[in-house]
Length: 261
Image 1: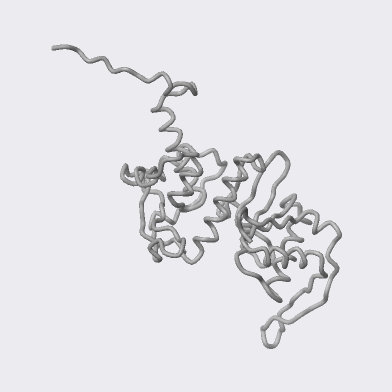
Image 2: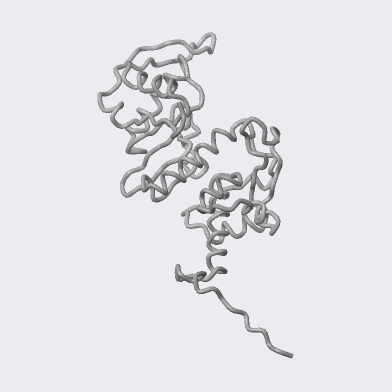
């Protein structure tokens, strides 16, 4: 019987790593991403890895690292058909290999814990973060669940994601609809307070609407209306108005997603 010698393509080793090593690295990268965000989609994970070929997320689900769940919209009107969360094996791998300093809970082991009303919001935060990492705007990031839980307190701004580069910490807020009255005032006031408390060096408001972007730019230059609860009715009522600091529009950037209008 003639022995068959397996030949390796030398091009597979041009990066200094073997295909197996690159496969392991991609697997760790994906489970870490999903661990930090809670869930993701096939196109988002494809962009994360810089892959041209589709099907990677489905293959990881088939291998038992991810769980594929059909969305309520079923992929209509530009929505994803499936969401991907970590399986038990994927979570164990993520917790063993993640570089983040503190582990956090992962409730999405039950995929139906995902609030699908907010998927578009958080998927835009994910794609914006991938672009920031690729272009050097950020070298690391913290998702909302990784940020100090003090952000749950009323008036303390906890952004959707924080982009980190050197000494800069940029709190990023994805806004897909315009805020009005009290909600707008508290949004701007919360950003101002977070910057004054030196939690972040800058903030960025990311939107897919030029009109919403202009509205936030205008609001940043206006006096800030404070609100207080009426002790009798327990309803919100306008309080005093304070001037916005001159530095606020300079430290809060409003960015329109590329290709949007």
